[in-house]
Amino acid sequence: MNIHFCGQDIKANIGIGVIGSFIIAVAASMFGFGGGPFMVPLMTVIMGLPIYVVVGSSLLAIFFNTLMASSKNVFFDTIDYKLFAIMAVAAVIGGYLGPQIAKRISPIWVKRVAVVLLLALATQLLGWWG
Image 1 (cartoon, rainbow, N blue to C red):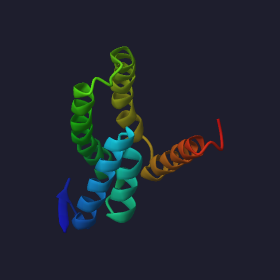
Image 2: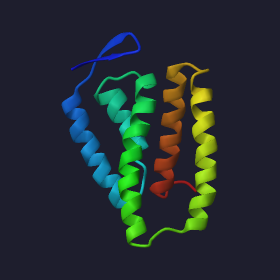
Image 3: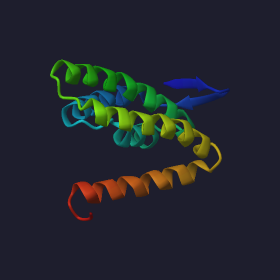
Image 4: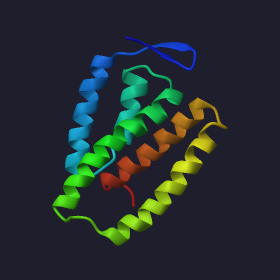
């Protein structure tokens, strides 16, 4: 499918995007992560979208998944509101600064930083570091 974005025609495999997004949303809801570490590679590597389209689009898609999962956690009373408040402030500030920084550096460096952070997270989760 061709997507027209900011004066450019971009070809993307929407079918794979829908299936991948569904799987990521289910996993994110089950395990409590936002889905971004999986949505961005899905959209850039598998669907072939440029990073400048992916960042905003994946955040918006994750927003709806997070909204649904959060509503279920409110229903089950599994939220620490003090921790939420602290993290929300940091997320708002980071959400403002991140795009400001990203638009000043090359897209390849954005990808490289993302890979380093994902590898650090993976080693931490696997118990290999930290």
